[in-house]
Image (cartoon, rainbow, N blue to C red; front, side, top):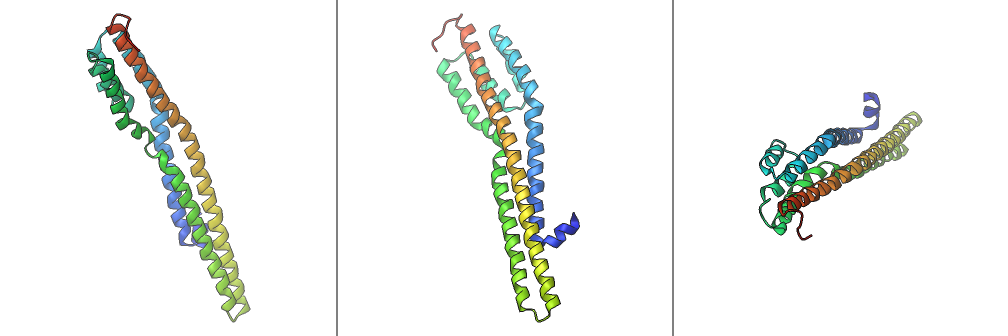
Length: 209
């Protein structure tokens, strides 16, 4: 592997750096999304139960014990359980504006990293072609052949590696994008469920939608 990187020239190391960043982002976000799915659903069930019994103090305490975006959004609604429906929903929307970007963090950079890998591969390809064309100026046939082979090899190595990293980055992005959208949708559904539970049971089963 090191030998191929050295043969491919300096831009191969730049592409390698991009690939390592992509892998790090993917692992980070996979742990974030898949590690909190079951706990978020369990927390929602408990919060709704507390809201139905008007036990807002325990619900707030439960949300305060967690630092997830969903917990903060639900907490914003619970802290205003004695306010009007408009104030509760406004608090939820305001908190969501701060917390939803945390769900998108990292994932949105993968398409840009894919483009960067492609560009680095292209620059490396041009670098290799320049070396290949310089071979024409060599007096010795052996030197011309060596430089031509070296330049073409550098060009192909960079093209291949750049496209591989770019493709992997896009695959990572598509995997995370689906999970990210599902997480945001669940947060919206959970917030609406808790707000409705607060209003319904607080007002004795009758409130304006």
